[in-house]
Image 1 (cartoon, rainbow, N blue to C red):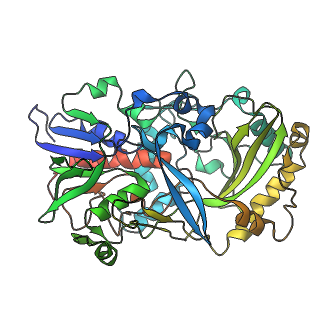
Image 2 (cartoon, rainbow, N blue to C red):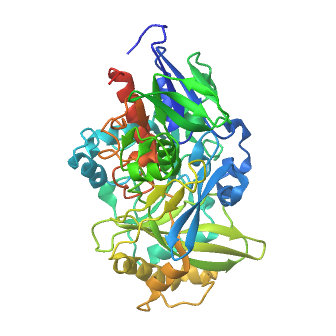
Image 3 (tube, helix red, strand yellow):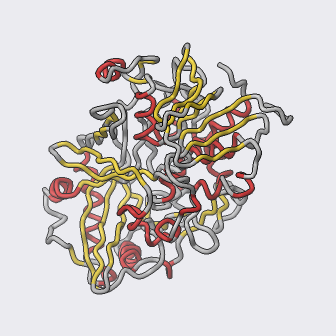
Length: 498
């Protein structure tokens, strides 16, 4: 690693989103590395209240924030609209801010598959170092000095439906968890940790990692409205990128951080992917790899409810939840109210139950042309999905009858009997939802090595949710930060030419 002022290498980071902002910030700490971020969307100085005010996240999902909507195909002609942020900060500018880590066994499974350095004991210190936890401070599980400010919503900030959900679940005997990032306390009922500042406004990874001080570095260039068409590969090595404008930019290394949909699409447009699929589009093959073939996501049914009067509260969409275990021991679902659509007279919200463990695999493929929007197929639900979701439905049914839910006047938008034998199947048919946690489209182990280097192409890495070999049992936002922190450290501490 360089300690002087002479620039030894130029690294292009394609995408200034959740992971790309972290990678660029950390790499540019070394004055021997010149870093250029190429972000397709606008800068974070364009953020308005739809980004910064957590309670307005639903407006962000409705298109108030620059995003790349991609239909997630469910089969049978059904599709779910998915949104990836197209702005500096990426999807951290429009997600629910849920700052969860997953479970130790998730990462121990990565290590057991042959990916040294990715077990729980390896990654937990990175999770801790990334956060500045306002509630817990510095403890064996939490950090007080990281760039991401983290706290949990207070009771007076919760929406009316969320308070009724929390109180009702307590009434029906759900155990309360003080810290849902402590795996020893699970399963149970808790409050989401979120990344907000002292004024209760959203903090994206770009705001946290690319603040004015970082952006003043001479060796860091942030270019927005700069969409990359392809990575240039010559003699088995990435040598730069080509923008959609036709501009070519040379580099010693390229890091693709465009998310679980657009990273695989970019690799395939660049000749890295399944040879047969690339041949269909007339693309030269630089590396025949299963790019886009193992997409994962958390899916589950949504049940719409309404109550009279306004939403209330100021908290964002991720407020309180049940982290459930259908067998009573092993966490395998989240259940919580989400996506309130308020008016003066009534509020409609969705009760979601998302499965966290799934062996199903979806896919990302190029569209009719390489430049067209990619085609994304959702992973199929596991064979035991209905049996596992039955536990969640039983808990929601108990909540429906609780005094807090009755007092609020919560009623189903469509009459239902959650205890009916076909209740889960009906809900899945009516309204299968995505948690927005697409991963594993460029996974370590088959597309990448354990340092996130593309197999068969030197000087090219992928760093974002797509690299996860399996999906964690929880929200993936903080996992992206962890991956980015760890890969940036690997790049800084090891010889850079392979």
